[in-house]
Image (cartoon, rainbow, N blue to C red):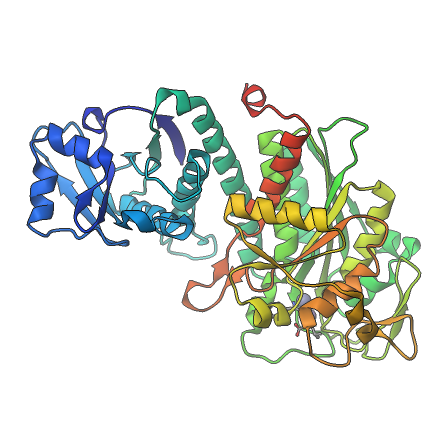
Length: 508
Ligand code: BES
Ligand code: MN
Ligand code: ZN
C-alpha cells in the first residue's frame, strides 16, 4: 500500500475515486460542497432526494458525474458534525477504507483529514487514516489453500490536507503511520501463527530475520544452558514441561548517544500456555497461542523504531517458552530460585508469565535502563477488571505511567492505570519461600500479578502493561490486534523528540 499527501481542489482531482464526507443530516462537508458547485449541484440534488442520510457507516458510490474529472466519487457518512470525536473519526476512516477496497478503484484521493475532530490535529487524523487502510487490508491466509483477499484492493491513497503549508508535517505523519502499521502487521502475523509452528525457536528465528531486514537491530539468543548458568531458575521452571527449548531473545537497537541510557521493552513470549500441571479448561484453549503477544509487540515496536530511525537506545528482551504439562513439568508446591536470588513457591503453574518475566526483569538490571516496560498477556483478571478496550497499566514510577498515558492518547491505543499500593503485597506471602507466585484469593488478580513483578523491578523505573484483553479478538473476528505497538512506538517517538529529534531532517 502506498500513501501520499497533497493539497488541492477536489474537482481538479483526476483519480479513480474521490472520497468526500457527508454529515448528518444530508449536509456536505466544505470540500464536498466545493466539488458540488463545480459539478452543477449533482451531489446536493442527490442528497435532497434522500439517497444518503450521512449517518456513520453509510457510503454511496457514484459514477460518471457530469463535469467531474474523477472516475468515481465515494460519499462517506460522517454523522453529526458536532459529534465527530476520536472514536467517530476512527469509525469513519474504517468504513471509508472498507468501501474503497470494494470499489474496484486501485487509487483514491481522500478528503477526510480536513474534518474537524475535537482536540485532534492533522497529524493524528492522517495517522488514523493510514492505520484504517492497513487494518482493512490485513489478512492471515498463509495457511489457507484458497486466499480470501479482496478482488482489487486499494493500492494507493492520497490524503488531501487543508493547505500547502501542512505538507511537510503531513508527510511526516504518513511516515509515522506507515512505520507503526508495519510494526502492527509484523506483530499480528507473529501472533496469529499456530503454536505448532510458532515455537520459542521459531520466534528467535523471526527476530534474526528482522535484524537482517533492519541491520540497526542486533539479535542475540541465550540458550537454556546459558540461562541455567546465569541462574534463571524461574524462567527455566516454566519451560521444563515442554519438549521445546526456551530461548531468551535479545534485540539491541543502539542509535542514540553512547551516554544515553537504554529503554528496555520486555515481552512475554509464552508460545502456548496450556496452564502446565494446573491445566486450563479446554474451552477456547486455542487462544493461548496468543500468550506470546507481548513478545510480538516488542518486535513490532522495534521494527517501527528502526524504520523511523529513532535516535534512541532501545533493548528488546523476549523470554520465550512453552508452558506444557510434560513429565518434567513443574508441580504446584515446587520452590525455585529466581535470577534475583529470591525463592518462589509455585502454587499454580498457570501463573507462568510472571515467572519468565521476573528473570527477564532482573536480567535487565545490567543494562542500567532509563526505563523498563514489560508487555504481557498476564491475567484473565485484567479482562474482568477493565474489559477489552484499554491495556492495564501499573508502574512504580508515576512520571513513567504519565508518559505512557500521554502516548496512549496520542496513538489512540488506550491504557488504564491500576493501583500498585504496598497494601496488596502481603497477599503474596509464602510459608515456605520468599514469595508465592499467586495470592491465596482471586481478588485483584491483575494487581497481584503486577505486585509479583514489582519485587523484581526495584532497581529501575518500571511499568507493566497487561494486554490480556487487548492483544487479540475472540469470536468471529478472532485475530491479533497488533496492540500495543502504536502505544509503544509513540512512547519511543516522544522520547526521541525529547532528545531533540528533528523528524524532518531524519527523513532525508
Ligand atoms: N496467559 C494467561 C492469562 C490470560 C488468560 C490472558 C486468558 C488472556 C486470556 C496467564 O498465564 C494465566 O494463566 N493467568 C492466570 C493467573 C492465575 C493462575 C493467578 C489467570 O489469569 O487465570
Ligand atoms: Mn497461564
Ligand atoms: Zn500465560
